[in-house]
Image (cartoon, rainbow, N blue to C red; front, top):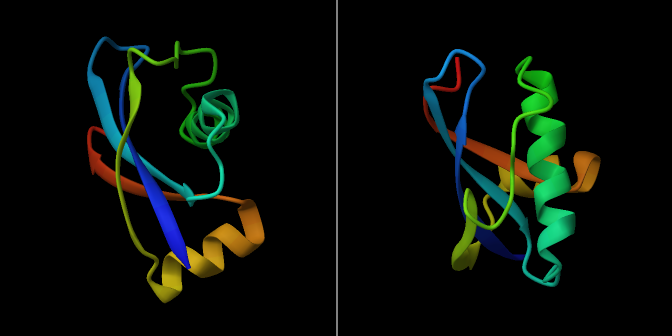
Length: 87
């Protein structure tokens, strides 16, 4: 499976920055769909309501999905790579 990686930076409620990648099937081109995936993830981290738009989230590149990515995409529709500030 080919996936698209969306590089994302969001300011947390405490003012610190979260950096994570949203991994989605490469067939999804609609930014609003990608942003919604990011918002779902933010909710799991207690960061719902934070701004997420094209300034915070941009297409980065495509690659082949790992088995872990594919399993998450099959169950949730997306996979998240936590980079920094995601605790």
